[in-house]
Each structure stands twice: as structure tokens, then as C-alpha cells.
Image 1 (cartoon, helix red, strand yellow):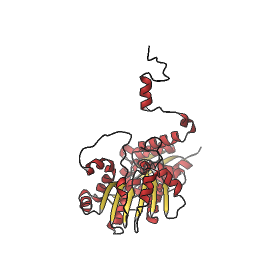
Image 2 (cartoon, one colour):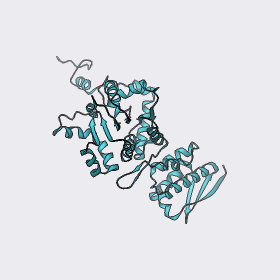
Image 3 (cartoon, one colour):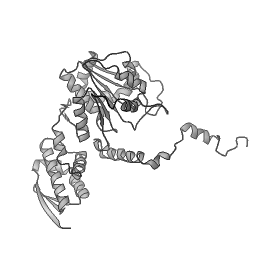
Image 4 (cartoon, helix red, strand yellow):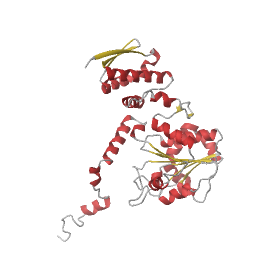
Length: 348
């Protein structure tokens, strides 16, 4: 195969950002595209096969422009740029970078980082009710919170209501001490974290004291009508069908609703149907309701998280793995004590 070389200009002030710490970004490009990349005073020479050199050249140009816009290039950006380029979808980072939702209290812009996230944000703008589905790390809750705070600051709504079912993640925590707020706060901590980062703790507390921001368990929504509010239901996979129906019928005039969930991480008791699963089947044909499905490709946490999510997706989608039966701890304990079917004679 014929080997060619191409030159790409990278400004000196952007070199470190584009190349990454210890040239980690460039080394990733070299490994995945099988090219050689050498920098000489801002002139980056790319050598390899024609196809791979052209891809590497396009990606470096995209990352350079991304850096020149003031962005800090992370490993996730490089991985995503490579993945999109391999699908002949160029300059994706630059296209989605134009959409700035808001800024955090420290001045950091909040933007969608993948096409899946961009579609999610656009759906929220265009629909009254949006279901945001996808694995952990895809920004479902954080982007929804950013959109809610932006609408609140622009006086598009009068208040923000955040709720999630108070269900333990596979553990029994027992009776928690303190008043009612202290008991439910641990379940709502992810919502508080996002509010503090985007709005600031002091502003959040002032609005909460005025009743303009409400963070409460899902059970407290019963009997209410929520007008002129931005309502976010988080961890919706842990609702029962009755809870989901109750929540959806609380919506009043002038309100917008975002429902987030990961159907692969349910904490419901065995045999209990998920309200999110039922809602997806019941509401899929109703106009004004959008369903946004994100995948492992939209994970924006550490790259290893993306690989973990992808590994679980592949495992769960393999029919051969569905035949594996996992015994409950109770049954395992019974067998260890000499229960039925162990071959152990209690009378012996």
C-alpha cells in the first residue's frame, strides 16, 4: 500500500491542548488510525496510507478548531471525533459546540457533547414531555437540570420541581435518623449536586426557601396540580406503573416535564413492573411526547465508564447469556445450611 505524508498547521498556543498530556491524544490517533504523527514547530506531519492520513488530518483540524474556540480537549472528545470520522461524519464536535445551554456558577459552559445529547436538548426545547433514556454518564439528569435552570432564569416558568422515587439501590439502609428532610436527602443528593454546580449553593438555598425550587420524593406529588413549572422526574425506572401514571397526571398548564431513567438499572423488587417500561409502550404514539434514547457512545464520564457500559450492553444483548440463572441470597443460604436438593441429610 502506498504511503503518503500530509502537513497540518497547529498554532503554538493550541498544541498542548490538541496533543494532550504526554501526547496522549496524538498517540491514540496513531494507534487507532495506524499512522505516524510528528510535530516540528507547529507543522504536524502525518504519514501512512492515504485513507488513514486523510482521516487523521481531518480529526486534527477539527480538534484544533475546537481548541481555538476555548474548549479543553478531553479524551472523550478525541474518542468521539475518531468514532464519528470513521462513520464519515466530520466536524461533529464543532457542530454541537455551538449549542451553549448556560454557564455554571464558576463560568464553565454547559453544552451537549455528543449527537445523542444534542438531540435530547433539542427535544426538550420542542416538546412538553420528554423521556430521556440511557445508561449512566450520558448527562440525562445534568442536561435536564441545565435546561430547567435556564428556563427559570429566563422567567419561562415560575418554579422548578425535582423528584425521584426513594428506593435503595439494592441495599437495606434501615431507619435513617433526623427529620423528614434528612431522611430523603440521601436519595436526592444527585439533584442537589447538579443544582449547586450550575446555580450555586447560595442562590439555590434562597430560591428553595422561597418555595421556587422544590426537591421532594415522588410520593409527595400525589394530589397536586403543577402549573407553570419545570418538572424533572429522575430515576424513573424505579417507579411502579401506578406511580408513573400518578406523576404524569399531575402536569398542569404552562409546565414542561422531563423524565429520565436507565432501564438496565432497576432497583424494584423482583416481579414488580417498571413504570418507565410501561410508559414507553403506552405513550409512544402521543404527539407532544418525545423519547430520546442514548447509548454507551453518549457517555461523557471517564472513557473506562463508556467501555464498561458497552461491555454490559453486549453481554445483555447476547441471547446465550439470558439462560444463566442466578439464585437469590436466601436460596443460597438455605442450600449451604443443608436445604432440599443439597444431598445433605439433616438426620445424619
